[in-house]
Image (cartoon, rainbow, N blue to C red; front, top):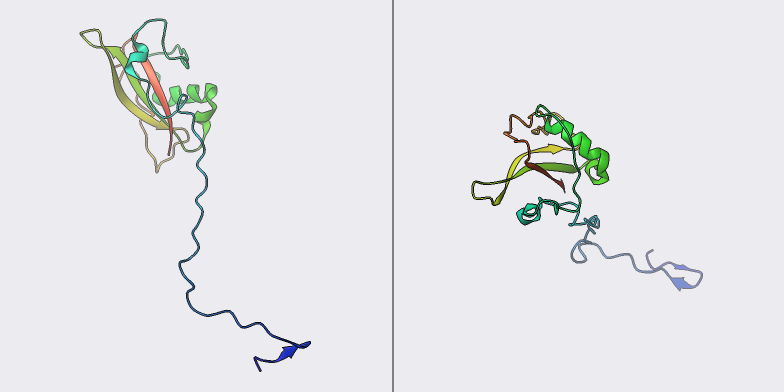
Length: 145
């Protein structure tokens, strides 16, 4: 009955059974382009070497020594839209001169833009607990998971 004709033409052969080669490749979603000038890592130490010529994306924040990294995260989210993304991670580092006058970058903690109990972060630590000194720079890097 497989050779039954329809209107004078034979039916097409049934599709072959079994594997026909490798399975189709899944196309990965295109990554979101990231402006490396804006986000992605801490500034180079040399960018802090000359007073008055700090990094061009500098934001001045006046706060207290008992401010937490979570409070600073919320302030950064107000001025940097990329910090509001769900997958944003903010890395905090202190930048200060060592005894020889050369600048040092010391990472002190990370926070998630939107924390939860399954992803604990360092948001409850205060600047004084982390040994921040008045006059030091606070470098915040915005990264994505």
